[in-house]
Amino acid sequence: MDPLDVLTNIENTLPYYQAIFSADEHKIVGYEVLARIKQDDEIESLGAFFHDDAIPDEYRIEVDYAVLTKALNHILEQKEEFLIFINQNPNLLMNDHGESLLELLQYFETKGLSLNRVVLEITEHNFNGDIESLQHLLKYYQTYGIKVAIDNIGKESSNLDRIGLLSPDILKVDLHILRQTAMTQSYQDVLYSLSLLARKMGATLLYEDIEASYQLQYAWRNGGRYFQGFYLHKPSAELVDPFLLKDKLKNQFEMFIAHEKKKLQAIYELTESFQVKMQQLMSQCRKMEGYDEMLQYIASELSIACFRVYICDENGFQRSSNFLKKEHEWIAEPDYLHKNWSWRPYFLENIIRMTHEQRGILSDLYNDIETGENIRTFSYPIENGHYLFIDISYAFLYEKDAL
Image 1 (tube, rainbow, N blue to C red):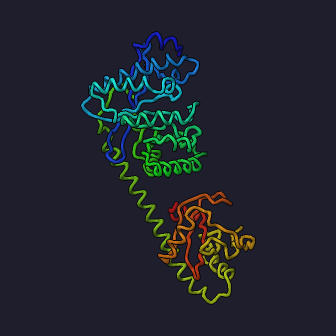
Image 2 (cartoon, rainbow, N blue to C red):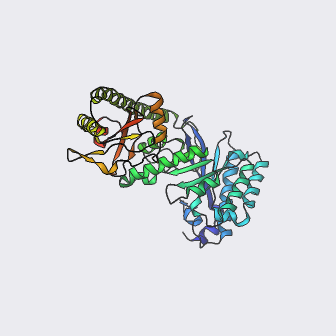
Image 3 (cartoon, helix red, strand yellow):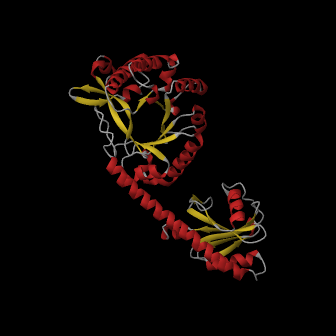
């Protein structure tokens, strides 16, 4: 699209609205305002126009505010109140330290718009200036009740330190790459880390670009409170019934819940089966001479389920060889003796839990450093402050539906 066609036809620009749905109420809680232009009876996106740095800043801002003005006028006519997500280029925003946008919003505040409804969306990795200056501006906006959302997390490289510094109210996580199956597992691990970050920051997670049921399920399972994407609602010129998908979402979430409960039940049953099995095995191990003999026996008894066993003390120092299954044979690896594993996530926390509960613990699913395989580890207290670790293979977990 020729930028001149946009600039000379600003009156033909118009807002489109893409609905954002909530997990807790199964209703539309807000809309993202998107810019369009009508030319020759066709509606075209203005995304490329706003991202073209060759177009002078003042022209892009003029078009942006023209669309935003139309959107806010339309929104004020509605009885229903909802969040209003507006995209802003942080580089353009900093031209006048955000004053012109704030003046526009305050003008609409005098007409009845609560600024608590406004969510300012910015893309952190597009910002080229001083991050602390942007931080101060966003903090300033937040004093007026305006919320801040960091957009496109997961789509491009995002600096988590910078995101933390900006203290957003909402993290918008992009699920586009999840459709590329070759990247699925590693990308899921990244998104899981982002869900932990959001929890630590007290930010709400909004998953966007949802185009299939399995993406909605993934978003729900990983802490998503808000959802957006073509699977739920395509951008349109009109606002729609807030309960448009209430029944559909309720039914889908009930399916997700049933699936998750079934998986959690399988994990619980697997934990219990290992607990019972280890109690039986330990009664046989008491008469054995040393840990290597004990591990050989345990490995042979659990050969169908695990591929590595070893023993550590309460400080994480390994007190036995590794026993590793290679091509259906168990091989002792004495080089691992005396290595320390206390640096691993949750290691010491699990040691304390086992000490107090005197029960085994099944870990969450993680990628094994040496094999690269998705595994779980069953940890079990044995004697004198020592603990047995049993690494369970992916194949066995898959068979037991405990992934």
